[in-house]
Amino acid sequence: MRFALFSALALSACTSIVPSTAMQLSGLSPTTADPADLAVDLTLPAGIDVSPGSALMLFSTTRSDTDETAAGTFALQRDGSVFKVNPADYAELRSLQATARAWYAENADATKGSLSITLSPCRLDAGPEDDARVSVAVRMAPDGAFLPLVRNGPLSAVTSEEQLRDMPDCP
Image (cartoon, rainbow, N blue to C red; front, side, top):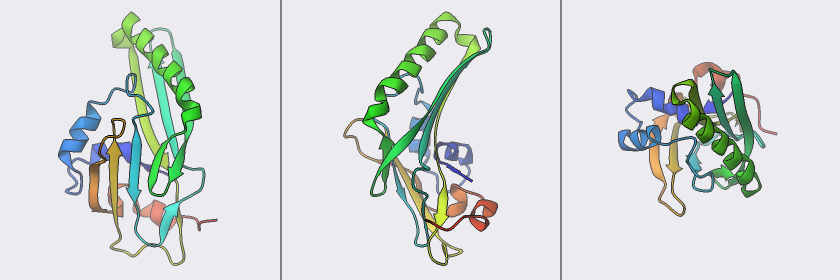
């Protein structure tokens, strides 16, 4: 079970999504976004947390004309409510991005890339209230401001009822 934070872009009809941030994220290129610049600030309600070690950044690029794929999964560091790429992983992620840019230069129509952040929730005590709210903000520039993506939205803005119902207890 995972919260796919950047997939919140697909929920643009949700009134909790901040359109200006969603538009900026839609323009974010997975091949040029510096991993040192990216961070997510997640404000969770009482009764829920992120399972230790479950916050991940997934980067993938595929080239359909040669059936090649380059991908990596990177554990995110947590500092309070902020999650970001571990500096030890910058070189590997940047290498994958360079591969994606090279493939794109060779055949743009055959090259696709994606960048997503996922995390697994866990239940604290009795779990979240039925009307629990969540906020998600993203930073896309070094020392930049966190821009709100989901502002005081229902948990359904980032997860499904089934995921909440089946959420394990926190360790």
